[in-house]
Image (cartoon, rainbow, N blue to C red; front, side, top):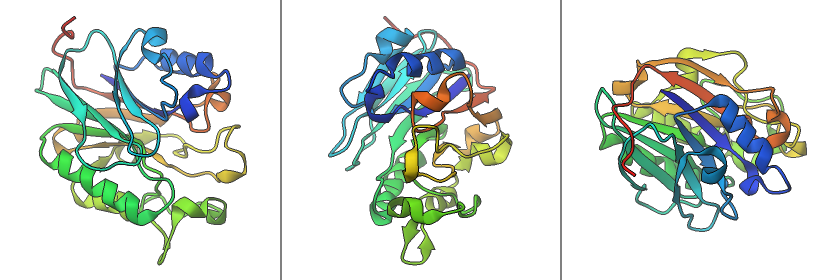
Length: 251
């Protein structure tokens, strides 16, 4: 099974929909977690995948694209108040049900990001096999600070310096950073050519897995080239997992 996480930047507005869909098609994921679905972009029609969307409280929707060959058992939104929302689907696999979540944590204040991370951790803790994917707007304690944090102070600074509390909490709750475990190549996911002055090189996009499924991951990398530099302000993250789907979705 192949999993992709991709922040497509304000619904792939400004004529970028073709470029975003080309990136997704080239990656050929079984499940893609997509963020910033402003304006309801026709991703399902363009990719041939089914799309499940969770509405935001005050931000932008997030969603999951699922390939037709997968059988979806259940779907919903993670309970709680999320600025951008958090969508989940439960997929039938040969090893048992697998829950995949698409999330996009609060971009401005670390205390709200930490609150949202607690909601995700509680949701994941009630499931044995779960994968969280998305733009966590947060640095990992293991990554070290970027070169110039002042250019992204709204996200990275807390009272004690660089704010890594959200990712640290998720790690304490047992969720494994797949890129840290099996990642290949440079890990930074921003900026692309569209990032402007807001970003310096950093890893904000993650794939996290519960212990029951983390050992099944074989590869993880940030996808560059092939139009990714101009399709969005984030590069996507792609991972392969040894878990096999059990069947197709019901029509």
